[in-house]
Length: 405
Ligand code: UD1
Image (cartoon, rainbow, N blue to C red; front, side, top):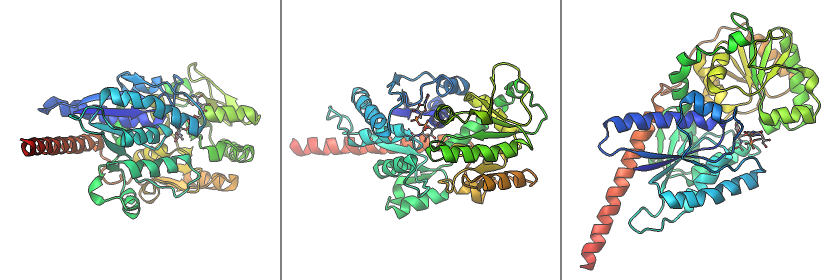
C-alpha cells in the first residue's frame, strides 16, 4: 500500500508523527507493508516553525517539499494545489492522508479528490482520508472552519477525535460508514514525548524552576490583526503579569502585528537560548519554541492563555487550566471534560477568569479514546480500506475480462 501523508503547518507535524510511528509498528508484523511518502507543502518554513518540530519529533525529512511559503489564502491554497497535482500524478498513492484544518489540508484534499490517475490498472484516484474531521466552531469567519467543512465534504474516510465531531458530520449528511471515532493523534504524540520533554532545559534557561508562571500563545487573525483587540488583550495580560510572570513564545504573524501596531511597550523581549532571569512582572516575549521545550513549559505552568486549538487539547491532557481567548471552540470536549474555559478577548473577562483559575483545583478527566493509540487505529482502518478496494478492483477487472472472452 502506498500512502501519501501531507504536512504543511506547525500543528500538522505532531499529528503526522503519530501516523508515521503507527506505520512503523504496523510494518513490523504486516504481510503487506505500507510505503509512505511524506509531503511538506512549505506553508510553514521558518526553522522554529518547521525544522525544529521535525528534529524534536524524530520525523524523517520530507520526501517532497513544495516550498510554497506565505501568501494570501487564495494564493497559498492555489500554489499548493498547483504544485501538489504533478506530485500526486507521479506517485499515484492508494491513499492521501490530510490532517487538521490548515490551508494545506484543504488544498491537497481538493486535488486528490478530483485527480484521475493515468494508468487504468491503478485506482482511478486515491482515497482521501481526513484526520481530525468533524470539528466545528460554527464561525465561518475562521479560515479553519471553511477548510474543515470543505475537506470533510470531500473526504472518503473521516477520523474523529470526539463524539461531537461525529454528530456534526451526521448533521451535514456524511454517511456513518465513512466515519471512525479513533481518538486523538495530537495526544498520541504528547504521551509519547512527555518524559523526553522533562529533559528540556527551558525552565532553567528562563530561571523558572519551582516558580509559578503563565504561558501565552496568540495567533488567530481575529485576536491579532486588529490593533484595538490586540492592545486590549495586552492590557489584560499586563494585569495578570502583576501576579505571575507571563512567558509568551510569539508566532511570526503576531510579532509582525506587535511591530506594525507599535505595541512593543507591553513586551519584554528575551532570548530562550541564553540564561536569563525573567522579569517577574512582565510579559516575556520570545521566539516560537520547539515541541519539547514548549511541552515542558506548558506542563509546569500554573495557567495557559491561548487561542490555539491544539493547546486546548494538550492542556486538557496535562490537567493545566486553559483560558481560551475566543468566543467559540471546535473542541467542546475540552470545556465539558477538560480544563478549558472560553473567555473571549475582552480584558475584564481575561483578567477575571485567569485570576480565579489560579486558585481552583483542577480535576483530570481524560476524554474517551485519548489513550495514545489513535494513530494505530487509523493505520489499521486504512489498511483494511485499501485491501478491500484493491480486492474489489481486481474482481471487477477479472469479471470484465471474462465477459469479453
Ligand atoms: C496557520 C493556520 C492555522 C494554524 C497556524 C498554526 C491556516 C489558514 N492557518 O496560521 O490554522 O493554527 O498556522 O501556527 O492554514 N510566517 C512566518 N514563518 C513561517 C510561517 C508563517 O514568518 O514559517 C508568517 C508570515 O508572515 C505569514 C504569517 O506568519 O504571512 C501567517 O502564516 P500562515 O501560514 O498564513 O497562517 P498562520 O497564522 O501561521
